[in-house]
Length: 130
Image (cartoon, rainbow, N blue to C red; front, side, top):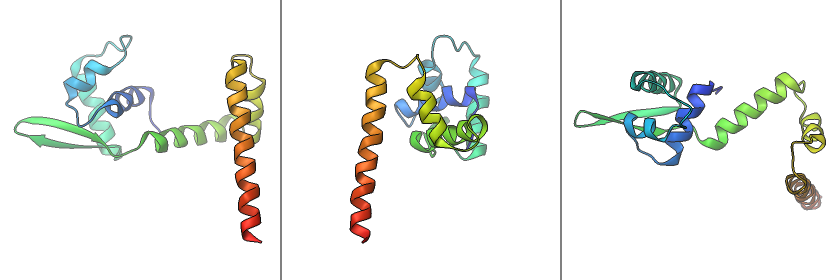
């Protein structure tokens, strides 16, 4: 499920603590997001239509809960970027991240460690199959 920038803001606010009312979600939005309350409600309605959240009422108050997990949302966003910017291949993305000067040495090392850990897991899995 692909999220718009506005939907990411709302989902990030909702993932912080739920269930939550629209007012509670609005209060958690970053300061630079200066929407009217009605805009927050519109984004919530769109997310519900997409199946990313569910709404239920207690008395006359609407509460929202995420259905879409942060992990699944991130994976969909990553797959979209990889598909569009890296022709569907993760290898060029990893190479780009390693070579990108915006990454600190510590971030590069974490990425390298993570990749080496996956290779070791793969080697273990290969030996189990044989």
